[in-house]
Image (tube, rainbow, N blue to C red):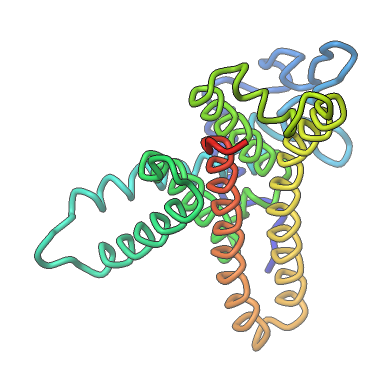
Length: 265
C-alpha cells in the first residue's frame, strides 16, 4: 500500500524532538516560516500538516536523501575493502561493471583527462540510482520524487561544470566561449548562450523529478487497485526507470563537463 511518507519520517523526527524539543517552540521562526531575501520569500524547511501545523524537524525527502547518503557512505567503503583482484565476488563484479560503464561514458564525452571526473560521474549515478530504487520498497519514498532534491542535484551539477570550465580556461576565457564566433554577434549570442546554459538546471531537475514522481505515483495507484498481479511488471518498470534516469543525468553531466573543458570555440 502506498504511503505519503517513509517509515523513517516519524522515527527520525521523534528522535530529533526528544533531543531538541518540539520544533514549533524550539526552532527559530525562519526555520519554520522561511525568510525573505531581496523581495523573494524562501519557505521554511520544517514539514507542515494540512492545517499548517508543524509535523517535525525535517521533511521526508531530506530524511530519505540523508539515508541514501549514509547507506552509500557505509556500503561502498566496505565493498572496496572486500576487493579481491584474483577472485572477485558477485558484488565486486557488479560494481566493476558499473565502473567500466561509467568510465566509457566519461571517455566518450570528456576529451581532456576524463578519468579525473569519473568519481564525480559515479557519485551522481549511484546516488540517483539508489534514491530512485527507494521507491521500489513500499515503506520508503524516493527522494528524487521531490523537486527540492532534483534541483539540489541540478544546481550542484551546474556549479561544478561551470567551475571546472572557469578553472580550465580562466574567467575571461570561459566567458568568451559564450560570445559566439565573432564580436559583432556577441551582443546577440551572449545572452542566448547564458540563458541556455542556465536553463540546464531546470531541464535536469524537471526531467528527473517528472519521471520518478510520475512512475512512482502511477505504480502506487495501480498497486492499490490491484495488488496481486500488477506489482510485478510495474516494479520491473520501476527498476528500469531508476537506472535509466540516473544514466541520463550522468550522461548529460559528462556532456556539460566535456563542453566546459573543450578547447574548441
